[in-house]
Image 1 (cartoon, rainbow, N blue to C red):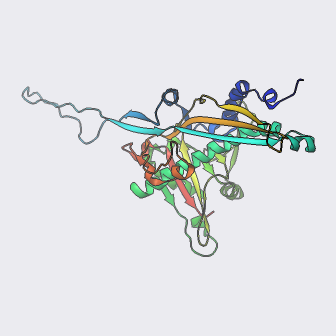
Image 2: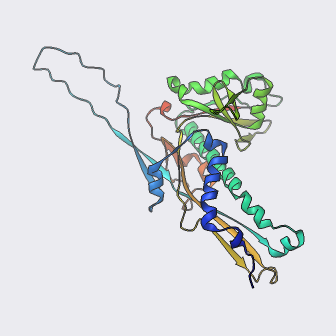
Image 3: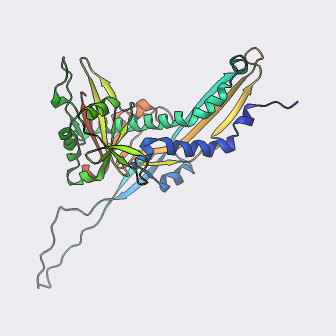
Length: 337
């Protein structure tokens, strides 16, 4: 007897490329251009190892000025050299599964697993954005602890009462955050903010809506920065008032690569569960690297083989290796609204 099964509705070999493609297309953060699709990281994922070294050339040093030419053959100039540094990125392996009992679909008249399958991509998109926010929070925590907070402008307070204008988002505050990049501030082109911050700017009539290259989709812009509105952007609860993180990012601020693991999607059936009624499961697995260039992963406080969101937020797991602050295309503004 022919029986329609979950494997008839979701064919893993077909579902995997669909899931990968849709994740990249639907995510506003991926579309914003802050990720560099890094072939070297992708090559690393295809092999073994928990971390990958990302070497880089340091810029030519300015410790000495140019030589003053002379006509004395006995005076020899000594050439300088260029040096290298080493960044380190961590492999991340994550998985998520969903299940439903056959009796549910029989009584409800609809198949929950079909709905689950249609929402897997959106769920992983939100997961990647949670990883991104946790990564930036860890970078910020390390910057405050180790580099004097030279990437951060914090105008928030935790005093009682409504926040004053000086503690809230404004053009001046955003420009101050961008100025932490010095003369490299033009590298920043995207702002990730909470919807409350977005609404505050909208009330000030400070948001423009610009058509895309084809003149179709109008995306929000402020001071020339593209806005990504995401309620996953951190809201830190204080004793008296919350503080909101707003991130200014430049193109190629982070590297990203994804290579499917050996079994990225599989289905499984438990005919004995539900007292014989049957239960179906859908398992999904993702293997990727999401790394802020110039901020080395140290693995100082990591219990497993891949970091959790809590471990990504831990300041001790990161350290800046780029010699200049302005080489890291990340700036942070913290406000009360």
